[in-house]
Structure formats: structure tokens, C-alpha cells
Image (cartoon, rainbow, N blue to C red; front, top):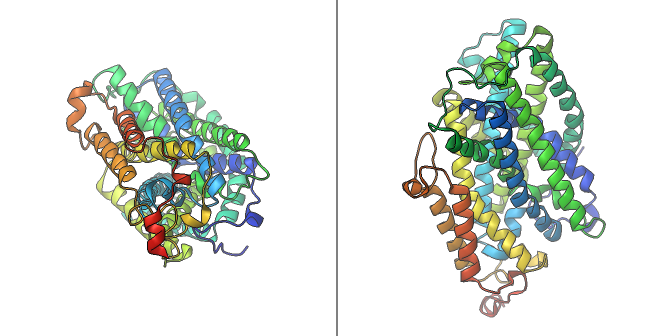
Length: 473
């Protein structure tokens, strides 16, 4: 299979051969991995029992899917990735906001997947063949996982799609076996000695809904376009693509997350997940667990690295997608080592997802508002101005930026960060919300309202910029 050469340029109609079924397969197969499963452990680590964990995860996921899934329709129309597509609203240079947000999201989730997958691999190999569990073993396993992931990401979309289709079947079987493996130790009660993280039930439940549930779909706000740009709107309707996205996200996220909750309660993993998961596994399930840790991590992290390569390619147009992917793979591996040796999983995960959700949500809301306003009508050539190192076009606005859209995002993100509550940082606006983290709601609301007020009755897809066009001529 040849290495994909295409970066963030417009995908020709002849190459847009994927369909809604492929979209479901890639969202399902890539998410059935320990990097997503571990988010089901978070509610248990917060002190919640079975039903509180389930309701918080399901509620957060459904809300997140409702906000995130429509973004898939943007790239269906533009035939390029979402960060580049957002240039229709932020400007062809202002879309760097989306590229940076996407890069940070993918970087964090890639590191998390390799971190958790590597830890489970070391633990299972220690039980199977007596592998030492010190830092050297972790370093070697992390490096091997990262190398395999980089190869898959460099080869690109077609290989990742085939891998996701295979993983959808293999990982479903492995998770079903896992239900049998841990059923004997399962309990519906909260893990002993794990009090409510925020001191009482409802604030902790809301934290779980955001950190464990909502964060899953939000991780895809810049990724969905990587897949739907290969779907042709001439052959597949917007409704069918939206339905496939919703199905893929809901099933692909809830199945592994709820499996994580089940196994965390069975393994009594209140303070840690990987160690108790391996320790509680019956001997017959160690090999399936090792396969799940290896193959699932490569599939999920591979898609994240692929997206990071596209985002870096968008930021640095002179870099090829393959080279950009190798660079971000090295950076992600560095974050894995930092996470393992310098942080604890719960604090790192919670802080990361809450902060990135606060930053990413207003960008997603503004992009959706802009898409509705322009009626899904875009100028694909004008979106590629920055990538071709030229000037002008209807999305040039002011020196390639839409100041009002960018300011709306920045203010919304700032409000979100000022109202976030993490184990490492608490924003000053928490006093106004009774100590409850409302960063997701506030950042999206403020960013969206400001954009609506500052750009009334404007449809960026049809806006002209005479001054910019004159400069270009």
C-alpha cells in the first residue's frame, strides 16, 4: 500500500470513495482501546459507584455528540480537514486557531493512549514472562508502541481505515471476553477509601460528566473532517453522514468507557487503573489483554498522530505530511515519558481534558454557527490560499484573519479557563458558579454569543473582501 501523499489540500472528487459505513467503522474501531477505556475509570476514581458513573458518562457523551457530530458536515462540503475549513470563518490565517487546538487535543490523547497501553503491556508481560517493571521496561515498550503508531500514521488514511475495520471486530471480541474475565469480582458499590473528589455527590457527578463523558466527543472536534473529506456529497447525503457520525461516536465511545467503569469496579481500581486491571485479570485473559493493549493503542494513537500530522502540515505548509507526522510522533512520545515519570494519571487526565475542552468548545461553536449561516456553501479554492503561500480570496478578511471571530474565540476560551476546576488549577470565576465547573457551558456560550453579536447576519461563505482582492491583484 503506497504512503498517502495528500496533506490538507482539497481532495479531488475521484478520491472521495469512502461512505457512512467507513465513518462508523473508523470511529468504532479506533476507539475500542485502553486510551478510551481508561476514561470509564475516571468516575470510579472520583468516588462514584456504578449507577452514578454510568449516568454521568452517558449524559456527558450524548451532550458532546450533539455538539460535535454536525462538524462532520463541514469537511463533507469543503473536501479538506476541519481546521483548514474553519478559515471560512476565522480567515485563511485565522484558521491556525483550529490547527493549534487540534494539535493540542491530538497530542494529549496520543500520549494518554500510549501511556496507558504501555503500562498495561508491561504489567501483562511481567505476569506472563517475568518482564521487570522498572523504568527501562516502560521506556522500551513506550518507544515500540510509538514507532508502530508512527508507521501506521505515516501510511495514512487508507491503512488506518483498514486497521479500524479489523479492530472493530477483534476488540469487540476481546472486550466481550473481558466481561467474563472480570465478572466474578464486579461490584456495584463505589471503591472503598475513595471519597467524592469534590466533597459531595452532585459537583463530583458533574465533573465526571464533563471529564469522562463530554471530553470524548470533544476530542473529535477537529478530527471528524479528516475522515469526511473522503466522503462525496454527490453520493451520500448530509443526513446519512450525520447519522453515521452520531452512531460511530455514541457506540465507539460508550462501549469502551462503560467497559472501563465495569473493570475499574471489579479490580477495585480507585487510585490506579492499569496496575489493578492486570492484577485482577485471570491468567487465561492475560494474552487477550496484551493484544488489546497493543493493537488497540496503535489503532487509536495512529489516527490521532495522523490528525496531528495534518494540523502541523497546515501550520507549516512547506512541511510534508509524512515529515510532520514523524515530528509530532517524537513530541507525543516525550509527553508519554513526562506523564509516566512526573505525574499521576488521574490529575493529569482530568486537568488535560477540562482545559482543552474549555479552549476547544468556543472554536467548535463558532465553526458550527458559521456553517449554518453559509448554508454549507464554501469556496474550496479560497480556503487553500494560505497553504499555497498566496493572498486574497473571499476568506482573506483582514490580512488573512477575521478579527471578530478570533476575538470571540479568545474571550470564550479565557472565560472557560477562568471557570475551570482541575486538581492542578482552579479558575477565579468558580466563586460565581458555587465551585462547580461550568467551563464547557460558559466558554461555548460566551464565544458563540459574541460571534453572533459581533458578526450579525453575516454568511462568511458568501462574504466578499474587495480590499483584499484588490491587494491580491
